[in-house]
Length: 129
Picture 1 (cartoon, rainbow, N blue to C red):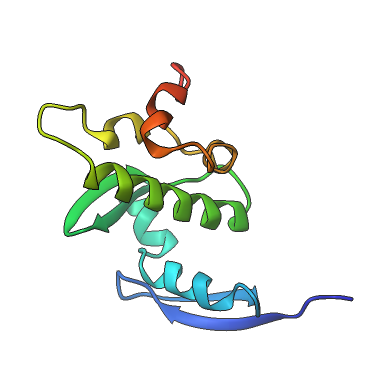
Picture 2 (picture 1 turned 45 degrees about the vertical axis):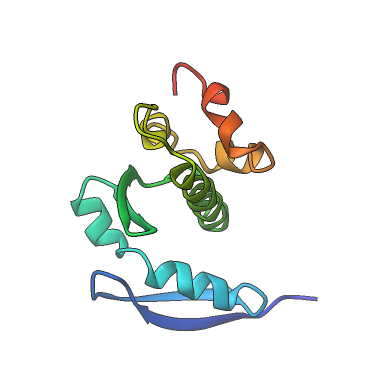
């Protein structure tokens, strides 16, 4: 049976509207993630960067660009969860967890490592990444 995709329009954080489609089971979470980010045009104008605000701390990371739309949305959610945990447990003098995330723009890497404890992720980052 074919799954119906519902069209919808949202206003992004930057104030620009965006039109999308999603199945009913993904609709609510997808809308919230899209509202919380800038539109594609604004992100590209910023050099493909994405700004995440976690516990009042603003983190600028490159946008996850490698993967399908669904994979990217999932990877952004995983990265946000990991970053939240790492920033809550971050102590002065330790390396900033954002630093090792800067070159990870593949949704596949985040999805493949989704079950790895956040504290163990930094050593899992390939040296070429």
